[in-house]
Image 1: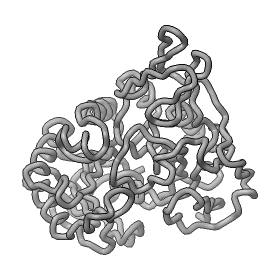
Image 2: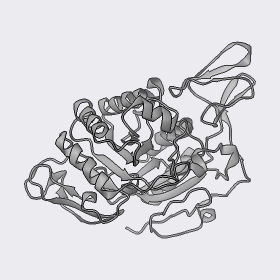
Image 3: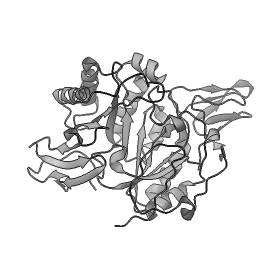
Image 4: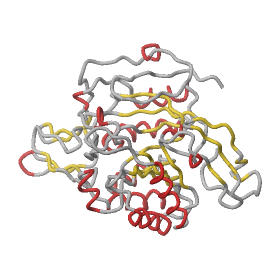
Length: 374
């Protein structure tokens, strides 16, 4: 069916929008606000400390924040002993994307996803692909006023199957994401997010009540790597993955393969073995090609051969579905039945030319294909 709305809000994010019927953002009721305009709201998950300080309890950093200070994410601000989020109803990016862009390859293929993001992040990845917004505060970006009710309504009007919390780190706009997710569910749509997985157990437990699918960036598989490249820790991410799987959220994993940093075959082998043991062989892994940008411009793009080697290792460890990303046209973009080996989904970039999954099963051998297909 013909889609109704597409927002080209490219001032803050270098992404390619889904090709749909185009209208101006203003026609949809979205108005760009003055630089740094926010709509503060009291944050969830914090506790008050002595002398007006607070401690945020949203993510594993558990930032102590003095009066007038902000957390590591640049989003949460202590105003006279009360913690506020500056990332509510003020996204800096709003798009309609193909679900394959998130990337989700086993979740409602060939459908559109209404995608939103605010500025800020609780990691400091040297290789960040959206650093223009993730490494800024909402007070430093141009934002739009978009309430959770309005976001859900626009997604429904645009005939999207889902709403995606993406581009930057959704954890940093947790309250907005949660409020949107509740409204989205009321309209019968799905909620998905692409996240670094750096979140505490209690807020995640609340979020999974409304979350249908998650693609988690498993950036590497050592504490040293996480510390050096992201100023973070691996262990909480692994706990998030296990919690998502346990609570019935469809999980896919993205691993950005960076030359000389996390491309060691033994590290990849260990990571894949952990995934199979703790999450199961049916969790797809996307090995994505790195391109030099942000603070890693000195490194070359990932050799395609290194990505092919990663796929080979994953399969040797029992991963049923593994893919190569950021290499349009590569055969490892396609899905093949784990049982009979025949082509299930033929992809080129974000486009699908054939889908041989019928009622969740391989058209040829009738094997059940892991995923969410309707």
